[in-house]
Amino acid sequence: MKEHHNIPQVATVRFLKNALHILKNPLPFHHRNFTEKGDIFKLNIGFNSQIIFSRNAALAQYVLQKNQKNYIKSKIQTRDLVKYVGKGLLTSEGELWKKQRQLIQPAFHREYLTNLLETIRQAIREEYQQITTDQTIDVFPMFNDLAFQTVVKSLFSSAANSADIKRLQHITEAAQKMLVRELRQPYLGWWFKASGTIRKHTDLTKEARQTLKNMVNERRASKERHDDLLDMLLDAKYDDGSLMDEEQLIDEILILFTAGHETTSNALTFTFQLLAMHPEWQEKIHEEALDNSHYGDDLMGFVMASKGCQQVIEESMRLYPPAYFIDRVNIEEDSFNGMTFEKGSSLLFSIYEIHRHPELWTQADQFRPERFDEGGRQFSSQYFPFGAGPRKCIGNNFAMYEMILAVTELVRNFKVSPKFSSIEITPLITLKPKNAFLKFEKRQRD
Image (cartoon, rainbow, N blue to C red; front, side):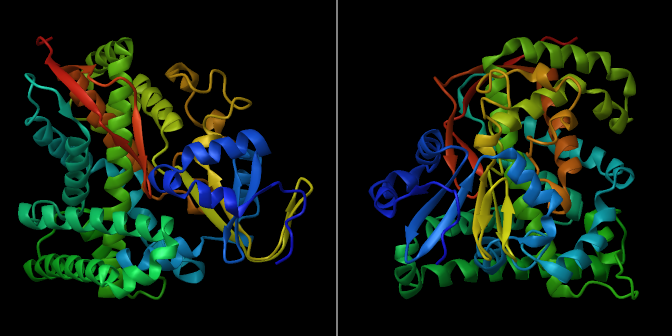
């Protein structure tokens, strides 16, 4: 294999010595390497395999936007993840991706999402009815359920029963944990296959697909319209006038389940941990929500006016980006700022490190929502919570609207206080919170 010119190297032996720590949390290992080697380094992981790690924001923008046609997603997403979620927008490439993106994009336009906001708010309110004020609770399961319920009801309205929802949630989470084991313990690949562990999880995926097919068939048979995302997907037509076939439809729904709830539940949990540590921002959001109460049922107007809440969420996703790594592989040889990348190089961008880079952010490790007083666009060259370029998350607006409603609804009714010493993380496919213990105090009615 040719050398990648001018890129510092981390030896395989160092990787192997730290294997157990990397399995639990790879971020400290990568941070040490960035500190010692600079903003880009090459890691030899054995078997003549190399990965280029980068926290260079300019390189990320070049790869994801400026020269994106020369870069595709890695086999982790286009092959390994496919067996659990199928070939949908997240995992497809080339013409299939372009075709699906063009087909599905209208479902996430602002005017269409406006019709879903009341459904989203109702799902949030139902979840918050379970909050108790007399005990300390880990809030991640609550926000995980909230985000999953929001996606389900936005897709299927009231068609999904609670048993199916819980089973689908279990399967999507089990699949993610299995994929993490495969990625971080590649030397056990033979055992995962021989022991039937992978088969067990792919069988679960088949079960989930059948459940979704039943729900879709019930909708078609009912001939009722709910104007939810499922109706939008069923109505969507390609340029030749044809509809999505059943298998492709299920692929896209599985992707929406997996990507649509996972990142949002993580972001909401981190946001409320940060709010618990900074009660002054709770009060700002509370006052803002009261000031905006005149919007009434105009939920889009309310969301657009919730600037302080949006600042808090933006800053939370800067410090704890749910999609904390983005990978790409170059189709042809490329170069950037004196560095040469041979054809087929694996590039892994640490969004976590870019978002905390001391040369890009003032007081990079501090919670300062005021830095986003003009929105996130001012930092578009270094801020990638939803990715960047053509492959930017299609559901970014859906997620932001949902999170603004979730944060304002809770802060309107409760004060939260921390019952943890520091924010802990569990880096899996996404950056997940750990031990997010909070206590709730009911607010007096305004």
